[in-house]
Amino acid sequence: DAGVTQSPTHLIKTRGQQVTLRCSPKSGHDTVSWYQQALGQGPQFIFQYYEEEERQRGNFPDRFSGHQFPNYSSELNVNALLLGDSALYLCASSSILQGANYGYTFGSGTRLTVV
Amino acid sequence: DQQVKQNSPSLSVQEGRISILNCDYTNSMFDYFLWYKKYPAEGPTFLISISSIKDKNEDGRFTVFLNKSAKHLSLHIVPSQPGDSAVYFCAASSNTDKLIFGTGTRLQVFP
Image (cartoon, rainbow over all chains, first blue to last red; front, side, top):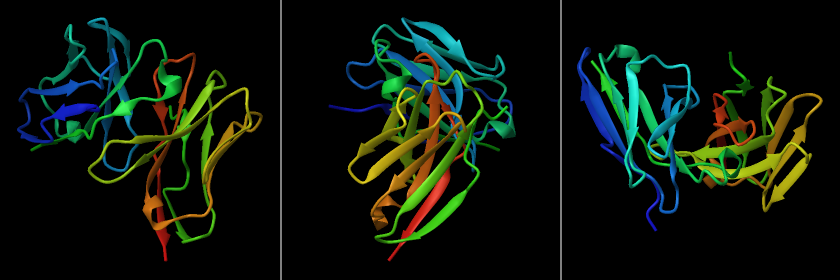
């Protein structure tokens, strides 16, 4: 049983460019949350998708957008990249019936470097 | 506004001894607390959780204690093993809402 799969594992982009990160949730999970983890910090909540809609959003600018597909997989898009967007981007999946209390299953993340 | 705080960025413990990791929170609406462990190049993995209606939860070598009046929780690892060396994150949620994470504590267990 595959867990959460994220791609790519590493990415280098130039300031001003756009990037798309992908996530496939754990089998049986229907909710996908995205987190940004900067160096030396804890994961910061970006947004959460359920039933192909953004269900919750953290304190991130509109340059961060996402999408969820009918098969529950998800994409995170970041436009007009800034140097400060360099971070580990983590995808977490869960079941809407259980919510956050039963914990999320995390992928290994995508390391984004903006130069 | 850091709602979940881990004030110790690092902790070094000898193998076989107890490791105590601490976490403080400010939001009294949190009703569930979780600990995650993270190895380099891997995503965080769930370790143990506790509901706000309890003050202790134990799972093998891991025990989490919750003091609601002090808005404080701690993770005890006994006995500590070298494989426990990792970054530990405290997280909290309210009404099955999103998880809010602390900044993490790097635990090093030495022989």
